[in-house]
Structures are given as C-alpha cells and as structure tokens.
Image (cartoon, rainbow, N blue to C red; front, side, top):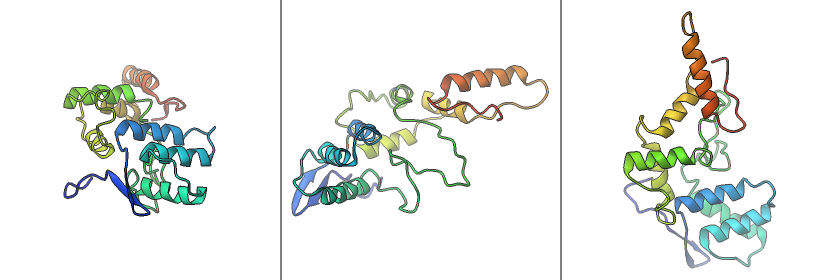
Length: 192
C-alpha cells in the first residue's frame, strides 16, 4: 500500500478501461478458486478474469493468461518479489533457511480474523463484503493488536514448549492448545 497514490481500481486493456473488483471477499474467493485442483488452468484463467474484471474475453487462452497474470501481478501480487516463490494466495513462501511453518490460513482462521477486526477496529467484515479493498484488508490484518484473538492463535502455534524441570504442567497445557489451534493438516511440533 502506498499512501501517496490512490488504490488500484481499474486496468486498461487494448484501450478499454475495466473496473477491477478487488474487494477482499472477491480476492479470497479467487484464491479458493485458484487452489481448486479439480479446475483446469483454462477454467481458472477464464473464471479469474471474470471474477476480477466481470468480462469474458474472446482472446485465445494464451492472451487471456497474460492478461490475468498482468492484472494479478499489478494488484494482488504487487508487493511480491519476482524472485521469491509464493503460494496460491500470493503470500511469500519462506526460503530454505527460514522456518518452514505456516502460521495462519485466511480460510481456516476466518472466524479469528472476523472477531479480531470487530474487536480492534469495530469493523464487521461481513458488512464490508464487496466494499473493503484488498489492500486495506491486508493493512488492517497486519495492524491487529497483540491482544487480538487472531494474533493470540498465531502466538500459540509458534510458541516453543516450555523446557526444564518443573515445566511439565505448562508443557502439557501448551501441547493441548497447539492441538486445539493447529491448522488442518498440520501436526503440532512436539519437539519445540
């Protein structure tokens, strides 16, 4: 997000200006669609363009793919370094020397995110569907207070288990919390 310039809301393609739907909920649905392994690349590209631009292009699939890539890269993926690998949601993937642990999932943690936005900002994300821009959503998500439910859950997921004599009770409590708040498909690291 750059406060010196307005948020991106349009794109020009072959001399025609199109509105881009960058509401946070539309972007989240786009991520869901792009992560659906049952959909072909062609369907994902065509559907992605329709979701973002509300238009069905008559270009060949290679041209549509390039348009989709450029729109995605200039809006949703604009803060991503081209040399750094990203996941389907555009989040930078850790390099080999970084911890290889995913700490949150926008879909699985939706309730915690909702509660945290309501508590910290008084924003009802359900009422903001179709309105709140993706860049604003990301900035607000990154600015949640340490006391927010979302950040408390991340803290539990990333906390090391207590070590040393006399910490058995705390260790078992933390293991229990890690199991409760673990992401689906993740097993808490019992060695921490």
